[in-house]
Image (tube, rainbow, N blue to C red):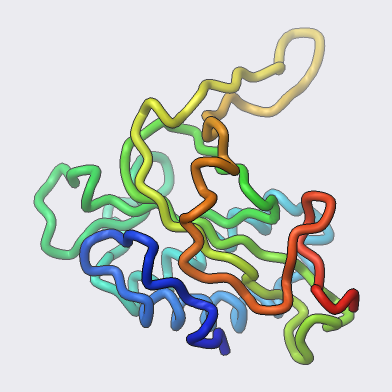
Length: 202
């Protein structure tokens, strides 16, 4: 279970979102996805999408934010979640997008929408060297409000002569933007060479 001492009360959160809801969501994501890490070894980008999806499920259950009931919005548009008492269309300040990432700083999106973003930074540890019984764990959670100016377009290299990823938007200067936005940090994890590693060298 995520320890209370690893949460920060100094990070601004979307209105109504609590540290308790984030704590319960971390526990849910870790518990449910531990059984699915084979997918990570097959296709890591699909697994990251699952982390974001399970984050939506958790917050829908534990917080005042609810999953969009319109499938075209939930699957193709923005946002993943909205405050339960917000009007339609959902204002950016009442919008919340859930993303999973194994990268330490980057955020990517198919859109440049303004709104709140919660990023579940995870790692897969099949030997359970960090924590016994945890082959998958969330090591940091970033919460940040982004505007259109925070995004930069990253075009696709796909074309008639070869494949490539679809176009995306990436967060400008992500390390600087997210430096003070970690609402949760797992004890015993440090960044080394751009990767989360155990502080004890395990």
